Image (cartoon, rainbow, N blue to C red; front, side, top):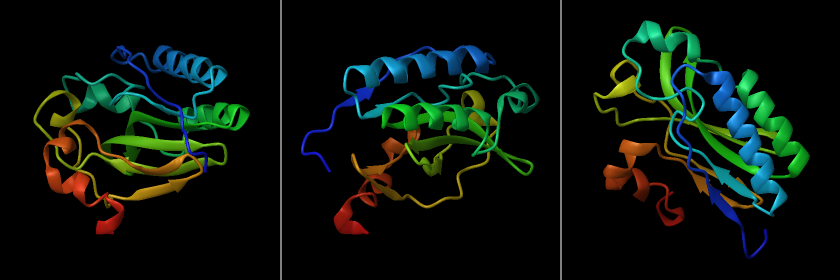
Length: 166
């Protein structure tokens, strides 16, 4: 592992239900950051889909599986540029909708996380609380733990990601 890792936190305003346009922006930003030496690129919660849905029925067409078409496209760029990316999306598994994040690297999906602490706002009004443990993923750019938005307000969520507490 390098002693210095260049990390980019991409700010973007995902457009609700415009998955294709949002994915275009995500792919463009990955390329831009990678071309200037970025190694770990992070995107916002629900970067692929937008957040403020009004119903489950409205949000379901934007959801996809992991792996799925969007994670596959991100993986292709990660492979091309040798970078790692964390981005938010709505994950559909069986009949459940999750507010999720995928960690993708040059070898494909490294790991996923589903938001655990669900406020009653936006799409979170309709998702299932996450059922995956708080996990640290070991990568060439460092150990990466993922939390999504409201999860950060609960100190135990971050504490259990600390290496000494595992």
